[in-house]
Length: 541
Ligand code: FS2
Ligand code: SF4
Image (cartoon, rainbow, N blue to C red; front, side, top):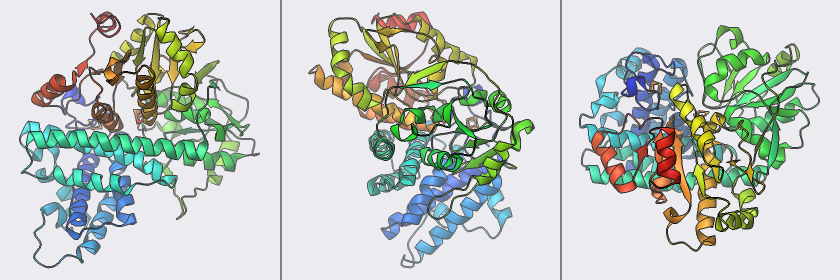
């Protein structure tokens, strides 16, 4: 195996024996083969000149399954590979004889042994691309497209779709196999990936807000009640909605975990009395927190950590998530899921153990923030707010991420943190106070709601009558972990945002030459010490 797609990759170079995330080498290789199969399918779509709804959904879901901490299940990946080949071969019937196709569009396994053999072959490995700059850019684009796939999946589940994004996904995947493309061509394609990341984030924002209303300032309880509960994690609001409906009047409470916290900000979910609060913190602490929760846990998307035996029998996956030996909740053709088994199990469980008491305040997505725009503009003009610091992104296991807590604490009191994603757990429970009633940490929501922060920045640019978004008193200190963060980063670059600090380390998949281009063109840098970075970002020293 060779995988270097996330921030925690071994020695910041690549996982080669087993994933730091717990992904086994056979699963890593099968995921590479799945991506290879998807690329072959995309190729055939292009040659035929059409796709189908089924193929588009398959590509998006399969890409999602290869993102960090989503799918650890070799059986499930093998089934996806088989399905991809079936879809490809069906479509291929429309091609005239003699059309030249690459191996990824022609290989056909006779049995599962062939699939495993192919997965273990060098030709499907990332390392098959020998030139490290070309490999770096191909992977940058592939990871960006995986992130786009994940966000598009969520929009599609809610009935929102965009043909152009599907077309781009295929075009980008095909381009990563094209030996005629130069470094410059691939750099341009990486930026174009950013454009489609913006479009996808906008589509998902529309899907969420039209379906569930605009997030509002909300106090979320972080304590527990004395009823049995179900804990739901991940980003899939539709699954949460179904769970809340089915648990009504059952005596079972529902709690959010990690990236599901922002669900509390949406008006549509406020009507459920048994939607009690948020339990625990970011994904990497789930092994302790899930054990303490006592009741069933549903994982709707990443980040899943290989579970302890102590709670494996009350852990459930759904959607693109799968783990060997953990029950999956399937969906019917209308996307409906049946949680009755989980609800019955919950009734027999003890209430969750109290981890903490208090509240988190959030709900500062674009609509809510813009309703406070006058107040914010006034606070900036009067000097009460010196700077906004975007600290969106991901949390992770490494102790180096303590930096973000220390950075938040050390920021001067005339600064406001804008956040989204699970990165927030490093500082959202600190009491950082407010500026003229504006809290010093404004949480927009999930990682995809980083889009909200961009909308706010663009509106402020208008309000201050500026020509360039970089003239705003907004600086960026972003924490990344998995491939959705790559899509968000490319979106920010596409929008022309400069001088982003990315940490706790720069991606291992960026070669020295590609890093140099990003530094020269966009001023990207990485974190140093809290003191140095405060000087650099806040005092422009
Ligand atoms: Fe956090 Fe994990 Fe949101 Fe990422 S829960 S790192 O998948 O998507 O952010
Ligand atoms: Fe390693 Fe990250 Fe890949 Fe897991 S996803 S195998 S931790 S690089």
